[in-house]
Length: 185
Image 1 (cartoon, rainbow, N blue to C red):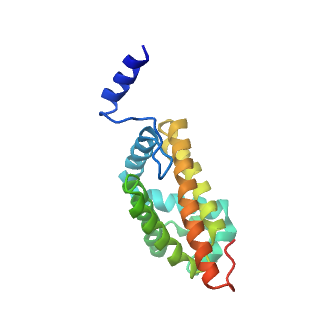
Image 2 (cartoon, one colour):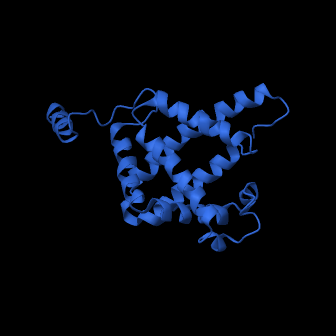
Image 3 (cartoon, rainbow, N blue to C red):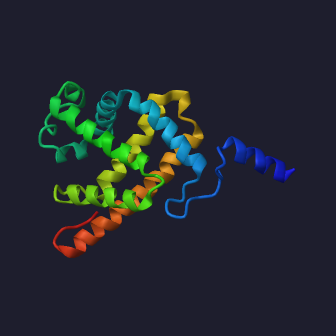
């Protein structure tokens, strides 16, 4: 019976083993598919979802808004029509698109994440801000997608974001070690 079930899963999974974790990311094909499927829904209005996500982030973590010179003195709802907010929201969402697009290319994914860490490190953004952002992101997905954000979708994103945080954290540690005067946390 197990062979029959495995064969059916293999056939309906497009010939892929859906449940063996990838050695680099720890994600299974089923988890990657859940991430891609949810991202396809978010991508239908990438900029709008980006703005809504960042507004939620600034409401959840108002202290993190201080890192944004153009936003720090504005209430989150005032940012909805702000062109700099729309631009940054687009950048954030395209960065997340790069993560999704490279789930099967870990070397490229690592390079993208390291570059992101380098870019933000000079602005005093640290791993705490990334953790705050990604905690909000998972909650935002649940709100925005409703019942389309299944438990598998939620846990898949959480698992992927642990990997993202790990890569970014490692890069920030390396940057901090290069310049002992700048704390990572």
